[in-house]
Image 1 (tube, rainbow, N blue to C red):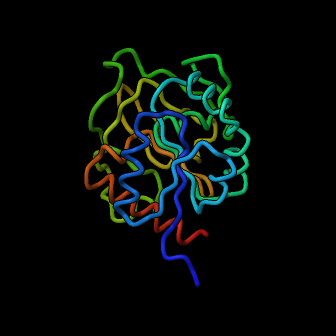
Image 2: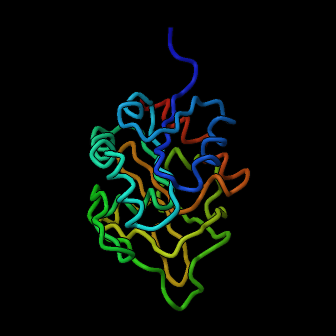
Length: 209
């Protein structure tokens, strides 16, 4: 008999938004596993990489938990994956925020937002789609989502960019490749539209497992 619920794994590396992400997916009917065990996370249908904090502390936490290679393998095997905030930035090769190398799944660098604007960028801002994706189904273009960040991912391959946001200049607020989607904003802090984004992601997972 087929399983009724999608199994979502949330990477536990002491990021402060773990429980709010877990609560949102549980509310949507998913079976959620919050874990720092690579073996346990390998059993899920989709992996969520949430995150707040700094580049170096996040990468060091992933290294201590022996999660770096399992995350890379999960993505390279084209399994459904969602990165949130730091979970987008760490997909790049390096960051201006620190000295630790990022995961290097995509060529590119994490850069500091323009000094002309108040940093960190905190609050609601528009997300403008550059192409269609199931994660944004039925969400109006230029919808407002909630941001909390001082850095942004700048992928070398601009075809990765799924959406952009203007804050002292345009930056990539979402990227996608295969079964991977990653966003700079926090859906779990974005009210009903953020919950709808998570609902869409679950439908995306169902269609790709």
